[in-house]
Image 1 (cartoon, rainbow, N blue to C red):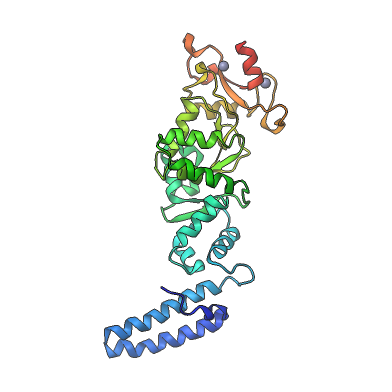
Image 2 (cartoon, protein in one colour):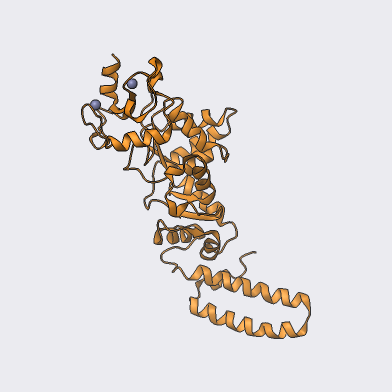
Length: 310
Ligand SMILES: [Zn+2]
Ligand SMILES: [Zn+2]
């Protein structure tokens, strides 16, 4: 639909409502007359009136463009599941999904879609709070009401990497190694993966099989928001400390209070001159028959971990 009635968007919601009421009552005549085309044309005006009403219910001084209205709506209701139809109403445009992607990936707003949450449910269901598990593909939620200003830089990087001819795992790793210590969102990772569902599985593999210290809210950094992933350092954990399943990792970290069991270091003490992170260590080495049971695992900061292996 072309925006033929642009000037009307400046009208008050009440004025638009009155016009609509008139159009709808006139429609009675069209219904009786029985001619098809005039009915359709009359409905076009009604559709446009409704669309203008949707645009007008958020005052212009708060948000004038479609994208701003979408953002305004999300920020008014953070952590609430919002359906695409609501965004159609407040944005007044059919292509609201594209505006949403710009907000999410280019501008760094942590708006997750039902599609991405479903990917997480399949591989990392512990990461997803129960109330989000029922999200439908066309549902969206603002997970954290602050804008990530570094997202614009990562957006360019993500666009380059997603076009490369390499595996999804390599693309994700490259993206994360370029953003060490910074949070990247589930939506960004999905985008880098070329929108492939496997992104969540690949992230888990990088953490559990390849030993990259990628953490989330439940796998080592309770201070993070849901849907945020951080590669804490550009190094892999020692070979013998890999292949620890995520659920075991979660339990051990939680049991040890997200602290080093030797020196009590926790992420709250992180500083750039001593950039540590926590790793899981096998008390009896995996290679020597030590198993992945919780009793055989302990949480260590990398300083203590390195010391033990020396
Ligand atoms: Zn320590
Ligand atoms: Zn170790």
